[in-house]
Length: 150
Image (cartoon, rainbow, N blue to C red; front, side):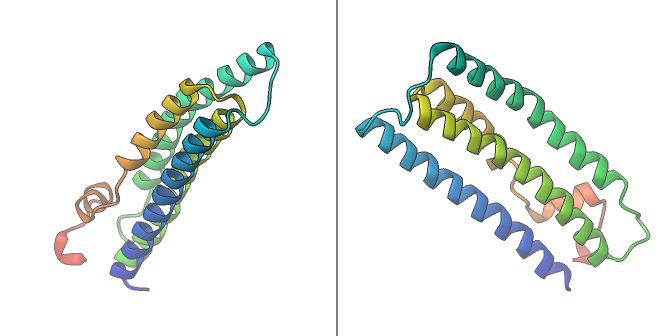
């Protein structure tokens, strides 16, 4: 597999996740605005779920960044560019999926409760997802490769 094809796959993963989460968030907001919350929870359960989402966001965001950084730093520099990019793709996929999972949980809780705070937490996690665009310069700096190698 060529390096350019691997970079295109990484970007495709990024765009699919970003667009689908944005679409789901928009549909969730429209649904809650028109119909209201989907399920009535008792106040203690709702507070427990809110706390869980906040803890997941506060722990999950740094964890996925640390995992990705550690995984990328352990990539053998003597490997070919294609093999480096394949390992980078796996690490990047785990990072994006972690952020996606937290985002989906926020949206599901927003649908259940109709509480706008959950939508704000989603927005925060979604912002971190959007800031992780896999540009060539980002990939090059993380993998410590030259522009000529691509």
